[in-house]
Amino acid sequence: MKLNIQARGMTLTDAMRGHVEDKLGKLDRILPGEVEAHVILQYESARHGATHFAEVTFRVWDNDIVSKSEGEDLYKAITEVSEQVTKQLRRLKEKRVAHRKGGATVRTMDNPEGTPAPGPESLEDLDAFDDVEQAPETKA
Image 1 (cartoon, rainbow, N blue to C red):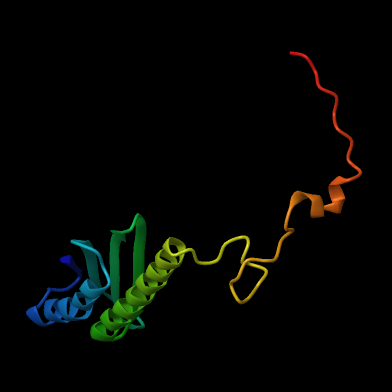
Image 2: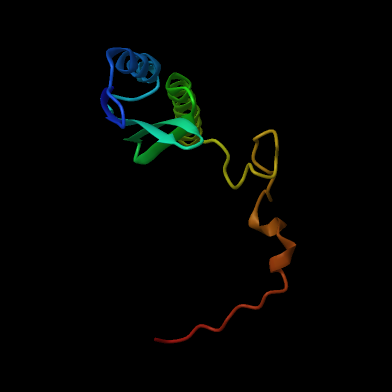
């Protein structure tokens, strides 16, 4: 994973960079190939106290993954962002695997066991079509 780390309102230290790389580096086990992530660390001092923001954005499997967190401690915000991203990626990966392996389909939605609903053995078993009249053929 390639990380582009940007600091706003503060100086990016080696400790901050190391913490981001440590937390987001674990995503390499989930992500396919080389992914470029944009990380924004921001500090805002206001009248009521200082606030740190952490934001991670990247694109994987044609989906944009965005996670934001704020708090008084920058390191906690980074940890929360990495946990949110991990949760989003796991959910997305489960959807992809379920879709690829046949997951829930229209036929299996009614049955919680996941087996197809029993259908008629043949078209003769359908009584609903016995009363339908055939439309006359038209010449074109």
